[in-house]
Length: 153
Image (cartoon, rainbow, N blue to C red; front, top):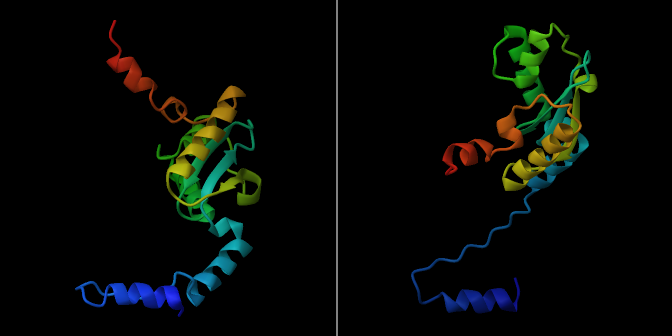
């Protein structure tokens, strides 16, 4: 494996620590990566849903596939529940729910985590400045309610 590996292995020989050699670069991961890059809709990240009737937009994020998240918004529309601000707007204004390719736009491919939250907030704020968003204020200004309730007068 190399001189460095042999040296490190010898350092731990007289201890209770066991050294295992593993790689993250497995055949399965290589195959999965190839499949994921070929179909962006199966990836995760930040997306935008556009109402086909009023052109207002909802920006969201998902750690799952974009297709799965789109289906959840569509189901919220069909059942008229309030689990989706996008669906709620469509139902309240009797607008239609368009097909995937006309309604959902992938803004950023990103894995789940802090970067995903930051990127989502950036895109939400961009739509907020255009006065074109369907997101609620807590997603635009997440600390506003905290500062408002805790400020000393």
